[in-house]
Amino acid sequence: MRVALTTESYLPYVSGVTVSVDALARGLGARGHEVLVIAPRPATGSAPQAVGSPGPEPGIAWLPSYQLPRLVPPAYRMAWPNPWAGAVRQAARWRPDVVHAHSPFVTGLLARNLARASGAPLVFTHHTRFADYGHYLGPLAAPGSALTDAYLRRFWAGCAAIVAPSSDLADEIRGRLPEDRRDRVHVVPTGIDVDGIRALAPVDPRPEAGWPADAVVVATLGRLAPEKSVDVILEAAAVALERTPSARLLVIGGGPSETDLRRRAEAFDGAVHLTGVLPRLEALAQLRGADLFTFASRTETQGLVLAEALAAGLPAVAVGGPGVADSVRDGVDGRIVSAEPEATRADRLGVALAELVEDSALRGALADRAAADADRFALPRRVAEMEEIYLAATSA
Image (cartoon, rainbow, N blue to C red; front, side):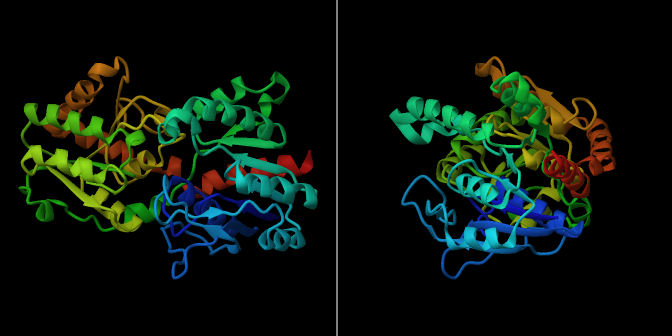
């Protein structure tokens, strides 16, 4: 079948959403489907770079775009709100069998227009908990959240299927839909290239960070922003270091909080190392060189990095939150600590990390299960699940 994917952001900007869209597009191509990605055009001189997903490169129809002066990262481009941009007319002539929106806003409206013009069902993946980003709106956060909620309900009403990357989010969406539409909600986490991650040569972070060879490296990976709660991880690292001096914290990534986190890391006398922004495959290779993974974000729809860490053979110690239990199996391939009470969250996370740093046998057992069972995250499995949703929507 022909599948058009619309997205508010795309490569070369790297995020959970852009990696997810690229993985789905290439995965569908590998299964013999024709795929057209409709996305904001990158800045002049930029072009999408491979981020490790297997499969053929999809066709791309670029939308005119612009760079916001604030709020978003430099490489993030916004599409102009033109409901019949040239890329949409191109896609309409292509006659897709399914239109799959990965944002409900500008490109979501484009997707809705394209679906109507093509007589194709509209599928939507809900990638982002928009209410969790209200801190960027300041005093407009409360009215912005209310307007977004009302808008989402209207957008969902026009979708033949709604995809949630985690069971937690799926339950939330079902609870906000009329009873007769709740069966439209499906859980399909983003798949990853498990074999590709396993094949990456590990990069030992100890020499660059100036750490001893016997240091036990706890890694975290992602965008350094307030909503990702990296500050909680730093507090937890302080707790862990008090209990076990062999622990070290590797922070992989960059973002708006990086300067503040580097300043705070100075108090750790070299026990915390920030890599800054790295190409995705280099970041995953650094991850492969660590011993443990930790995660404290409370804003995720899935937490894609949890699956990537487990596939890399790292036990994950995570704060309980949206999507976490879909990836980490407490006591099997990692530990999940309670998010409440908030005042002692970092203490619980730090104690759990220290226990696994000190207990190499338990850490090894959890790592073995993480690596052995990682195929449950494999991209072909997830793409096949999405294909079933498409087939049901087109036959309805």
